[in-house]
Amino acid sequence: MRGSRRRRAGQHRAREAQYNGPGGGPGSSVGSEFSGQQGSNAARLEALGLRESESPSNPDLNAAFGFVLSGDFKSAKSSAQKAAEAARAGGQDPIVQQAGLVWRVANAFEQTTAAMADKRYDAAKNHAAEAGSGARALLALGGLDATDVDHSIQSAGQAWTLAKKAADKAAAEQTGREVPIVDQHQLPHDRNWAFCGVATLIMMLRANGINQGSSTGELNGLADRVYYTGKGTSGADMAGVLRERGLKDSTYTTTGGKGALLQSLDKGQPVPFGVMSVQGVVTKLEGGSSHRYSGRRVGDSHTRQFRGSGHWVLVVRYEGKPEAPTAFYVNDPDLGGELRCTPAQLDDMGMGNGNYYMVHQ
Image (cartoon, rainbow, N blue to C red; front, top):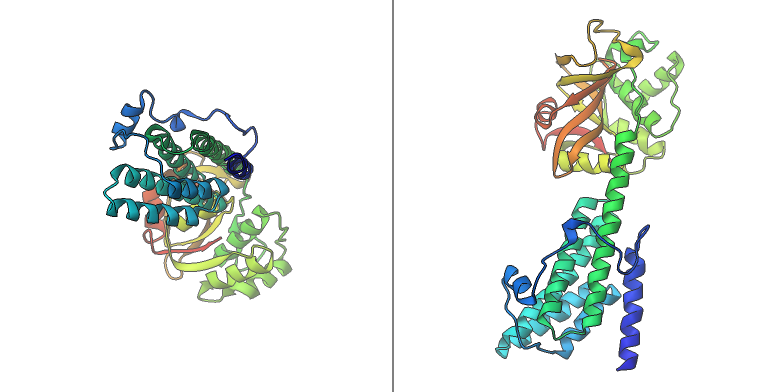
């Protein structure tokens, strides 16, 4: 038994190391979103639709929970499912309840890990909270080693805290990021009126610290790669240039949606965006004024329809939560400024969510 406890303690340390973020550690406090049900065990279980039992004990479930502590979530889920099937066949409802909770905790930790890897920090917080809620229900039911279950609750709290800090950091970086504005009509080229895609590509490169010049010769070189006279800028070729310059995950699509766009923005990457119109409120102007729209001022509404091959802009950031953004900010090279657009306006500009022409990461 002592050897088993030492093994479990080592497994817990492995889980703790995986989820320890800055300021984390056993017993570290978490936000109110993770506080869970308070009060008696019966009240907690009732809130989850469960009932109190006589602390059923099952060696298979203890083994399954050991997999949770070691981070082998697939084995934990498989073992819990087998224990549930055996208990159901034997009419052991309390064991079935326990097995369902073990599966739930393992799945929530697995989803937390995947969300963190994808930098979906709000989703990671939700999954970590789910893991903690399930573990607290297991503690209330009894039957499993209370120290092990408590360790899993602490790990869930650490995961939640780490995800929150990562989300806060990403939001701060996104909010504070300055993406340079390029006014296509100020470019020293006789085709600057058609170089919206070239200007958008220059903004994207400069946003990533890649010094793309804008002399006539440099513009010719870039235009030779992406611009087709009478047709406009190729999104696929734009993505190819970005991959060559170090943005290896750049992908062009004509069937994009908000999900992929938001994922790129959450990674700190602007998104070249093909539109048939622009609309929004002016929030910034390069040099304080627009070369083409001399009467535009910060705070003005701005709308323009484009024909033919359309127009390219750069989506630079958004406001609100990923699951419910409230506004998007767009660098428009035709305006030579930044626009604040509602989600509905962005959909209209991009011909509808699911029909976005864009280069995402």
